[in-house]
Amino acid sequence: MTLVVFLSSLLGAMAIGAPIAFALMFCGIVLMSYMGMFMPQIVAQNMVDGANSFVLLAIPFFILAGELMNAGGLSKRIIEFAITFVGHLRGGLGFVAIIAALIMAALSGSAAADTAALAAILIPMMSKAGYNVPRSAGLIAAGGIIAPVIPPSIAFIIFGVAANVSITQLFLAGIVPGMMMAVALLITWGIVSRRDGVESLPKVGWAERGRATLRAGWALMMPVIILGGIRFGIFTPTEAGVVAAVYAMFVGLFVYRELKFSDLYSVFLRAAKTTSVVLFLVAGALVSAWLITSANIPGEITRILEPVMGNQLVLMLMIMVLVFVVGTALDLTPTILILTPVLMPIIRQAGIDPVYFGVMFIMNNCIGLLTPPVGVVLNVVSGVARVPLGRVITGVTPFLIAHFMVLMLLTFFPQLVLVPLSWMRH
Image 1 (tube, one colour):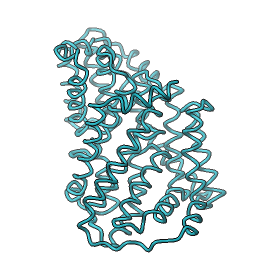
Image 2 (cartoon, helix red, strand yellow):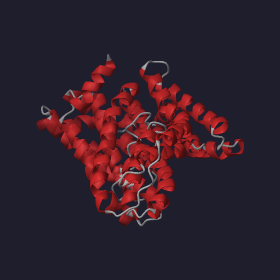
Image 3 (tube, rainbow, N blue to C red):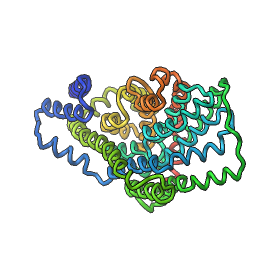
Image 4 (cartoon, rainbow, N blue to C red):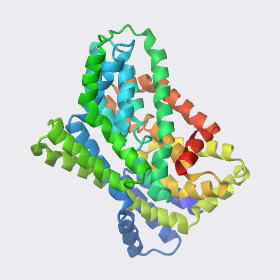
């Protein structure tokens, strides 16, 4: 019965248009009242404890790093770098979009920010060259969702805090799946773009490629510094956020000189607004998470799933379907905060590696960013590219299928994640 109370109160609050953070607090209060233990100080204490985390400090710094990267010219130089190497190929600007998305994913960890930056620069170029614009917008959206999988990932930070899983291991375990997502997009784009009669960019020589590499060198060094520092224990993921923000500011101000001191106020303000939304969600979720544990809702779900608890593959498939369905209706962060405290006890009881599950869980949630009715990344690229949402949904379909195939491959062959992870742990 507690499961029914939890779901009905949460979904009811969302149905009347309550913001997700308030819906999470409301369902927690309803559960408390149902269990006869309502105390306002519990709500306040859990909200404060939810936001009072050293690990969560990484979120505002990585968000700030993403804003500084876009304002300081790092994104633009990464795209120019990719154009010199693959822009001359048939469908070359599509390959540029994928490679640039992969590199930028290792800088900011934000799907919406990366998608907006790529769409603003590449969609006009692709339209002028004769590319199918809705399909191009769909490709950029599909490339944008690699960002939460490739470290540094804000989604991994939130999941790691909610699930009590090593964020460093999540970061390192996300590299191979993120690369697989990019390769799947490259193959799919190579197939679907053949029918388009588009103009290829002129091929440039190695001298120009060398100059483009030098221009982008400072931007390309950023993921090397972040991932190398985390992998070799030079700094923690939280400290990596500070390093990323300071590095992006230094490069934007003093190297590329596209970021002015007068721009810093607006950059910091945008980062602060985004951070406040994320951290308020986390604070609200901790209220419902505490009540989920107190009401033993994971135990109720475990009893429902008991017939398949002995079969990890079937259990993972069922959970992946559940996560996908929820992910179509909710944004990435609320889905993580709502489902993680419910599912993690089940995952641990079934003997599934929590880091492996975390990677799969985030990948599945990222796919939800490309599916209606919410489809946050779809809405971003639709607005920036000025393409109707319905046409973007049509354009993204082949790339959505490619991501699904990667997800299923990793579900049936978990060693593709676990083998690199076991090497990294040693």
